[in-house]
Image 1: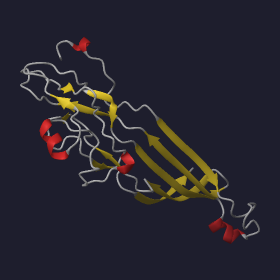
Image 2: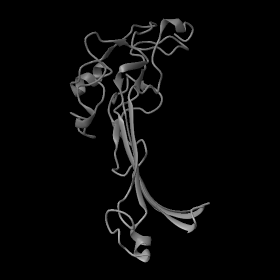
Image 3: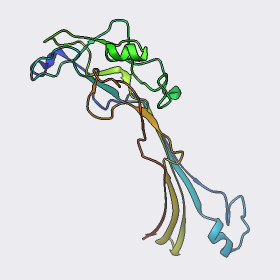
Length: 222
C-alpha cells in the first residue's frame, strides 16, 4: 500500500548477497634475465621480453526478481500484489545450469503465476487471487526468488617498451572482455514481472558485459 509503507519491509531491488572478484598480474618469465630465453640478444628481447599477463574474474549471485500484478479486481490508483500459494515457492526446481532457452521443460525460472499458465505448462501454481479490492501478501521483491548469477572474465596482455630511461615508455597490449563469452538467464531486468502474463517466469538470454570484445591498444606513458 503506497499510502501505508510501514506494512511492508523488503530487500533492495539490486541486492546481491555474494560477490567474489579475483584479480592478478603475472610477469611472463621470458626474455633477458628471466627463466626462459634469458640469454637472448637485445633485438630479440624487444619482442619476447617484458610481457605481463593480468586478469579480473567476477562471480556474483543474482538479484531478486520483481513480482507484481493482480489476479483479482485491483484497487484504483494502488498497485496490488497477488497472494502466495501456501506450500509452493516462487522459484522453480530447474537450476540455472540446467536451463535451456526454448525448451518448455527447462526454460523457466519461476513456477506458474496464474491458473491458466499452470494448466498449460503443468508447473506448480505459485500465486493465487488476492480477492477483489484486496491487498495480496506476495512480496514485491522475494529474496528466495532470484535471477541467475552472473560471471565475467576480463584479461589483458601488455608490454612496456622504455623510450627514455624509465620516465617515458610505450605500452603495447591486447584486451579481452568477457573472454569466455559467458551468458546468464533472467526473466525481467527492470520493471515488474506480472503474474497474469501467460509467459510469467520464462527465461531470456542475458549477458552482463554483452558479447566478447577484443581490442588492441597502444599508449604512451610519461
